[in-house]
Image (cartoon, rainbow, N blue to C red):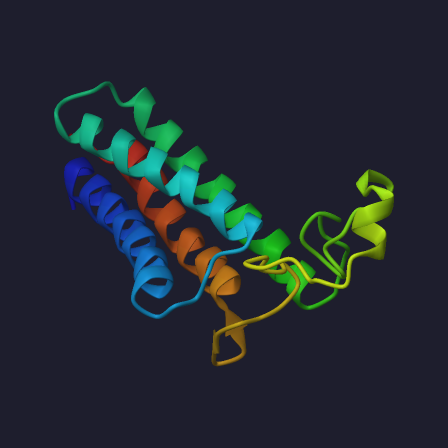
Length: 155
């Protein structure tokens, strides 16, 4: 395969993952947690980088595309580990989701729960034992292989 074919596949892969995330959110009704949102930005960067490379950017830019999917994949690994309780996640979106030190007295006495807060350590959807974050990590490993192949392939 040519370099542009590898880049095209990697770019379309990130686009599919990002569109899938938006589909789960807007069609499926699965609101994203904070770490889910963190995983979207590197995919957007990879898509932009892929489009720029396809229009003739230097080969060095391909490594930025690889870095983008590596970052979102690592966030996915971290997020999946938080979901499986392998390690703690950010206090703002795990456990009770409340940072008691930042709350006022009236917040502590309030009986109303926050609305719209999605916890990062809750698995809301899974397939074959992997959550969306887990699947993001797995697919990003594959996309990373395409980016690296693109960087090494002849024009």
